[in-house]
Image (cartoon, rainbow, N blue to C red):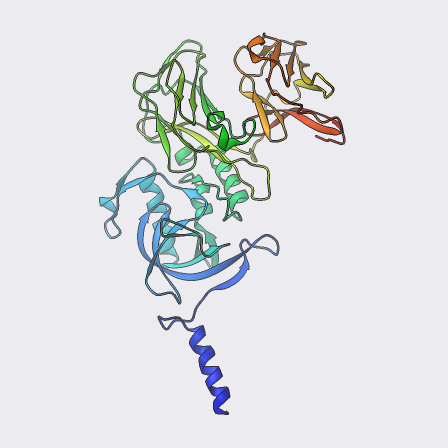
Length: 427
């Protein structure tokens, strides 16, 4: 072989071999099985250290040194004491150690061999690489994040950059809800306070206008559905899927049929209105190609998940009020929509919202419609003039284009109860 050609081949070999002397295992392919969907970068790795339910340390083939890896798209409960070699020394919130133990069990079944994946290799948080992590069991790669979510060991944490796993993880979370396993078993951590009081939670994720300019347009609402019992929510806490949380102050009591609202932004606590104090809205808006969504979660002091809402709904998406309310839109000036109860039973619009593209109008209390009752909501007007059957959104301009559009009655997890379209619009 000529020397020049030999030198070229040798140089290529040096390039293909990492500093550790191991062939660089990075390659490209579809993020998920099949021939469709986004492409990812893949790496082979070996477990170095177990940290908690959504974080490990690894050695990646062809890359020098140990790297921390944060699982893409999932959020386990918080562990406070870490121990790689002595699991009995670990401490953490309820559900945290179970997630770590299950992750460790699966990785050991794979003999410590891992496959990492990311759409964007530079994706990290606080120096930790954000990666989908898979183990090889029975000759097949198994997505650890999917397994942990499906078994109720973790929450879906939708990412706006590593989006390939969002649809599957949302579905897996809602399937775990249906099975009432682990996190979604309301007495998993023991019989908690007021265990028999039924609670309903919903969140506002897409308020009117630009979300970042109206942080208090996003909120949690917690309804005490008991007709007779009050409930003390002091020291309970709410969170979205991210790490942040808001602890409800001591002395907070919600009476029968009453609602506690936790606004995302700043304000002064009063009556049943509390303020989280965030400077940015916490909830993701769904509806584009990234398949975003989120959830609102209420935990009692011992760590049981007592009420929640995950959106958009993709599993068991039904409501007893679907088809019960006819929506009739009047797009000419003055703009309004009528909501007519065409069923044979009362329909309470509280907990539902009127949706137009990019904004929602939440129905407040005192929104019960008996059969054949109609509520009219004007796009403009003064909300101070609201009555039982007439509401005013108070928008300054025109929102219903004459050329066409749609208007929906929906739950806050995006189940459509009724819709009307006009012109070029369609439901």
